[in-house]
Structure formats: C-alpha cells, structure tokens
Image (cartoon, rainbow, N blue to C red; front, side):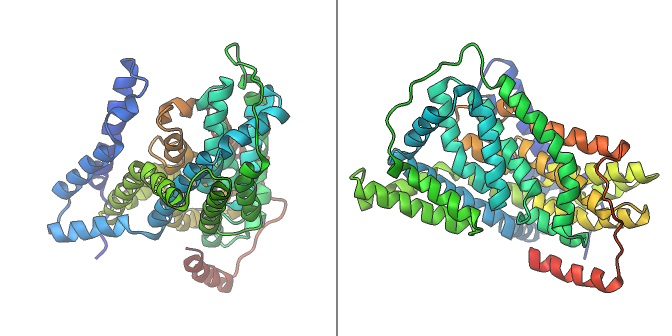
Length: 454
C-alpha cells in the first residue's frame, strides 16, 4: 500500500546531508584542506539509515528489504559497475605510462593558456557523443590530474572544466539515459528538445569558454617542456574515444579499453599477465569508497521515496503554481529538489516527469521548453552535489588531492546554464517556433516507451 506524502520521511536524508556538510564545512573553515574526507561520507549515510530504521514504521525485516532493494536498483548497480571499470582502466593506463604520454603530447601541441578551455570543449564533445557523464569523467579525469601536477594549473579548475563539459554533453546528448527518459515521459522527440535546449546551453557554453580561458592560467603557472611520449601508450585513450563515438556501450568501451591497455603493457614488457590482473584489482579497490557510498545512498533514497518523502516534496511545490512563469519555475525547482534528495538524475526524471508533463498541459506551456528546463536543472545539480556520483568519481580519481568543495566554486558552466534557464522564463528567447499537438494514442504509446527506456 502506497504511503501518504510525509515531510517527516525526509528526516533521515536531512540528517545524512546535514551531518556530511556540517562536519566537512566545519573542518574546512578550521583550516583542514581535506575537511570533507575527515569523516567518511559512507558513515554519514549510515547515520541517516539508522534514523530511518528508528522513525519509519514497520518491521525491521520490511525496512531492511526496502534498503536492499534501493541498493540493488538498476541505475545504482550500473553506476557502481562504471566505477569499477573506470578504476581498472585508469590504473592500467597509468601503469603503462599512457597518462604521462598523453599529457606530454598535449603539452607539445597545445599552448598552456588553452589547456583549461580545451579540456572543457573536449569533455563537451566526448560526452555529447557517448551520452554518459560518468564515462567521460572516467576517461579524461586521469589526464586532468597529471596535467595539473605537471603545469601548476589548479587541479580543482581542471576537474571543474571536465565536469562542466560532462554537464553540457549529458544535457544535450541524444543517447543520454536521462534525456531519453524525460523526452519519452513528456512525449516529445529528443531532437526537438535539443533544438530548444541549445538556446539555453549555447550562451552558457560560450561564456564558460571565455571564463576558462581568462582564469585558466595565473601567476604561479609554470610553462613546462613536454617530455617524451609514445603514441602506442596513448592508443588506449584513442581506442576508447573512437569506439565510444560510434555509440558502443560504456561498459564495452571501458572493458576493451582496459584489455587493450593491458595488452600494450604486456607486449612492451611493462608488466606480466599476472601483474595486469593485479592492477585491474587495484583499480577496483581504488573505487571501493565511492562504490559503497553510492550503494548506501541508493538504499536510503529508496526508503525515503517509499515512505512518501518525495511525494511530499512534489505536493508542496505544486502549490506555488499560479501561472505560466511560476509553472516553468516549478519545472526547475521540483526536479532540482528531488535530485538533491536522490542524487540520481535518471530516477529524478522518472519521479517528476509526469508532474512536469501535467503542468505543461494545464498551463499550455510547450513541453519541449519544460523538458529543457527540467533536464538542464537536474544535470547541473547532479554534477554540483558534493555527494553526487560525477564529482565523487572525479575527485576519487584525483586520489584525495582535491575535495568536492574545492571543485564546486569553479563549475561556471553549470551556474551559467541555470542562469540562462531562469532568464528564459522571463525573456522567451528559448521558445520553439512551432506548437506541438498531442493525441490520446500518442500519449499511450509514450507511456509504454518509458518502460523500454528504463
């Protein structure tokens, strides 16, 4: 039986987020640069889970089953598998010298003042092509880390450029899971949503490139001489990018990329087959913390949802609608609030999509515009949450050299995208040229397709 909407159901998540942020900010303000790592994030989630077990009604077994079901949801498991494969690929390519070779090649071809905006644009293109921010980050983050070490450019700034590029690509890609879910729930074509969405994200991209160019270098940046590089050691990255661009599944991309890197390492005598398997395992272990954290957050989020916490958020926000402008604002605030609670943009699209669709029809607002506002918001917030998968993956690959709170201030593209999205509500520069018409048959077909998309 479905639970009634309940604000109290959100308390466990409030405890988790509040504890995580309070401890991290408190220690950071005291001068600890690694304040957000002092207490493992997983411990904060566990505290929230304990609170959920205490305040939620029902047997211990029922609550435990809900926790496990949330941990085992498809999107959570997929995310965790990407973590593992990303760790393996990053470790093996590092051991064969691929990262150093790639960096040295980049330094020999790209002037240092173009490295940061270049990283942003490359990330935009890669994520746009492969449709996954996680795969983009897994591929490019190791290069960002080594570039920062060799040039003196802020590692936080380089990782922010990467995350911003992943935001843009994930928002605009026609094969991204969240985009597919949102467009099918709203019963619009993803290419039509793209044409409206680019009017919001395009200006943000241009301004972000300028900002990354201006602030990409500073007085303490050192011009370095490129070292030796081997094209063979760079091939795993090229291989991964090429097969990703032709639309191969991210799991296949990372798996074969790791095997290809391993083969090069064995042929060149960098390690034996047994050593290769050990490095793969090392890569898995490197991602254990973020994997565990993601599992626990997924479990807690599911418990909160089942107890009516998400429905309560939806119910309260709908009361603020008084016209077209406020409806568009809620189309941003509602999914954004839910994504802050769930830290999963695809699930957020599933949960809030039907509500946004109803608002579009009730207030005669183009669904393509509403879908663009919704998608832009959840993608940006997903990559700016300090406990979100994207920023955690990037900082985990950095090996603790930089924390999420150090990266967040540089996520300029995300803030600009939100600004232009809000601006489009009051100044209609992102409206579609033609009006959509819907039939009952097309609505029913769309509902069936949503299940296929998920």
